[in-house]
Length: 380
Ligand SMILES: Cc1cc2nc3c(=O)[nH]c(=O)nc-3n(C[C@H](O)[C@H](O)[C@H](O)COP(=O)(O)OP(=O)(O)OC[C@H]3O[C@@H](n4cnc5c(N)ncnc54)[C@H](O)[C@@H]3O)c2cc1C
Image (tube, rainbow, N blue to C red; front, side, top):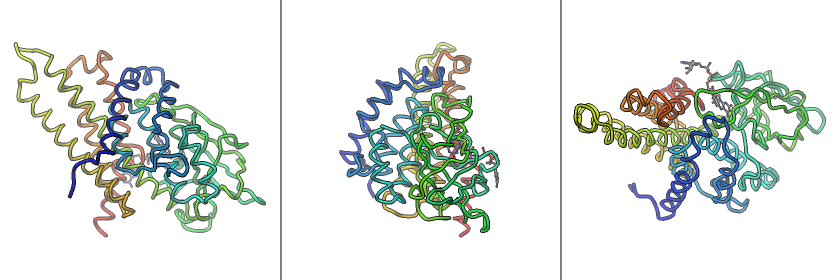
């Protein structure tokens, strides 16, 4: 057993840390308030190769795995969770399935653009009546000559407003049981009939784009079917195993930011003649935060390591996501408490961390859904 990062992994983490401290930390509050990520950030991310972290080298990517992605996502999310989710979805939920299930032609067409950051990807599974029960989706894809015609509405699509390509899950066979008749499609932004709908106003991760995506007779060539016909739900779920490792990494990053802010403030703030860090009640909070963050990171790295080895990681990914997201919310709550009244105002970025942490228990499978996945595995 080996807990030490390799020299390459250390270098990758340090590069991501330096980028996050110089480019993201000073802008994270603006991203949140202005509900957009600064274009200069995207450009630096291109220069650093962050969009192509997990794309294979022959398509212009860095050819790295989930462990390295996790290291980068922890650093990025520690500074700015809006940028973090944008990057996580792009690498895990879009590059991931094209790399794993795409034809040679699809890989040649899409991976170089995704790897360079020329375009950003989005993943469209959720619908108004199909959230946790994603297999209940109602969007349809009908074969018409040499094309599929897609109709339906997707909601809460991360990167919806900024994406150049969408992976859309749609029903291709209404006659079989609900998870079986679903297929995945690669839908370019410029497709006639694809429209970006409402931009959501969110509690947290406000700098990230979250929109409706409306498909109204959207016609894509047959060649844009990703994987096999009617096997798309398996792709959606396999993809989410990777995505959940990304969100677990996001949660660890947010939790770490909370611990760091709490440590700093508790050493500076004096009450009853001493820094509040001198009081055991505060120390215990810091100790519990630190312990949970380390445990969450270990679960996350384990799931990432299993996925990189090609082993089944569904349970591990859900355990990591469940525990890390709860840790982020625990740490954000304690951090705000340690800041007292100031934590409840915009004097510190703590209130943003508190809002950003909340989503980690909801998207890519809410906490209850992670428990369902884990229990199903435990019960065999
Ligand atoms: C900011 C944001 C970004 C998102 N990005 C994307 C994206 O890029 N692509 C995408 O496809 N989707 C995306 N989503 C959707 C997200 O994955 C769903 O919101 C999530 O899966 C939960 O679905 P729901 O909101 O419909 O809640 P519901 O499924 O309605 O659940 C409501 C509550 O009931 C609980 N619940 C549901 N079923 C059960 C059960 N069987 N047992 C116990 N409890 C249960 C849930 O845990 C939850 O607490 C995003 C959502 C948000 C808010």
